[in-house]
Length: 303
Image (cartoon, rainbow, N blue to C red; front, side):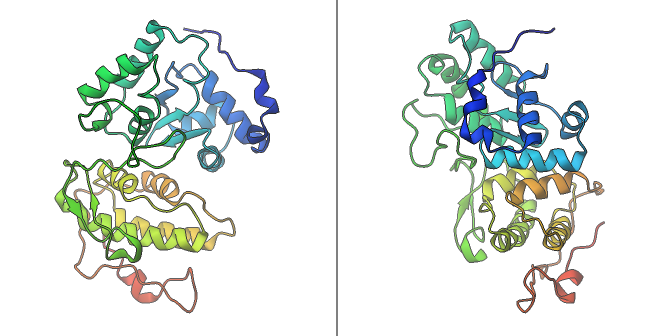
């Protein structure tokens, strides 16, 4: 069913929008106006569909979504797109509109990182507080039960690309700076067997982010990526993605997003990837970005 969309024409005077590339402007306008976009601005759409509808190659669309995410206009993760300020610019702030937004949220996986970001971004808004509060208590976003108030330091600030720490799972070490400290609380349902994979991938991508001067790798975002792709060769793919990224002249800005898209193009395994106890990331310090034969040999074999 078609409908009219309201886009403020002042957007063309916005210096941040003006600074976007031509293709990013096109993809952002598409993100508002394609028929999948509901009142929440949070909906399922594969990158391939976006690329087809705006006449871009898949690689170009992936790059442009990274640009939009870096500038906090829109985020695409695991088949879901969030147009961050869609709700802010709705002309109507009625109870009916609030119910429509909640209806959009119920169509999405409650553990998805973008659902969590949305809830933390908008749940304290006065006109959404009651309806989102009910959804909040029902567990959308897998957030803990607590009064709705001003977000604390562990919660997501408006526009932040990082997910909050849930504090609901058991802790795991090896996900901090240096790869040996920084105990992180994972979601309670994160598979125990996937924990060594998470630590190994985190170390590989953390080092890659440092080499590219990219956004820091967030362990919880990475955990969500791995949990949704448990039959992928996640560690081997991390080695391959890092080697590929280092071979390109273009610097990567969002390492986790790039790795996630790389992983989606890797074939599934029959089961969980097998790891040897000594599978680690070994970088050649004499040639940053290059891998020693030992490192490539230590890539886990697929089943």
